Image (cartoon, rainbow over all chains, first blue to last red; front, side, top):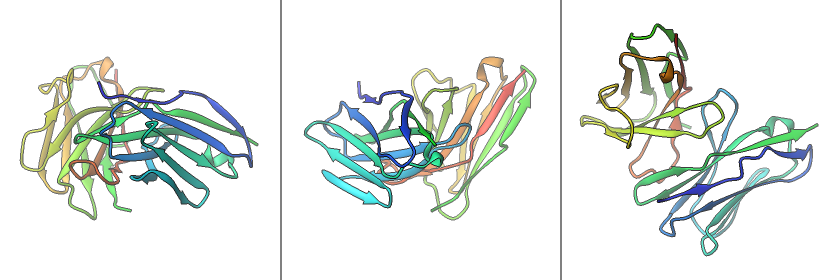
Length: 109
Length: 116
């Protein structure tokens, strides 16, 4: 069974610090990796996607992919209270999109 | 990014009635629409995948006769919850994208259904 695992949290980070969110997946055939942010009562919105090993940076966000270890992470630099949300990891493999349960992130002012 | 409009945002209905939720892709042609359900503090649960002009593919455990999905055009997909019961109360979200989902999924705003 294909699985995507995330720590449910909550992960509490002081404002201005780096928030690190992790996700592991079970299917080595996974090809595409996505991070979505979801505010309470709202639909998910795409933050980052990554296809290749290594780091991908976009503003304050950096996605890191390590296919050998089967994990993908999201770093948020200079965390802001507005970053407080649930972050969902999603992985595509064999024409399926598998979602993690999400990590709740709380940025403390 | 592309826009997916979902309507209604909120709906309250009596047990036994049917509710229709519409999902429209406003500036792109969604060959595939995905319908999700999300219970409080839980992740998205894929209910079904619909391709324009063909029958939807339902995930295991999802009753196709209860959750009717129609994808008659490249810009409109509908989900009808038939004979709704309180346990059907949930947040329903549609998204449009490609098959396989090798790119961004564009989500609707979601529809919160409360069945009394």
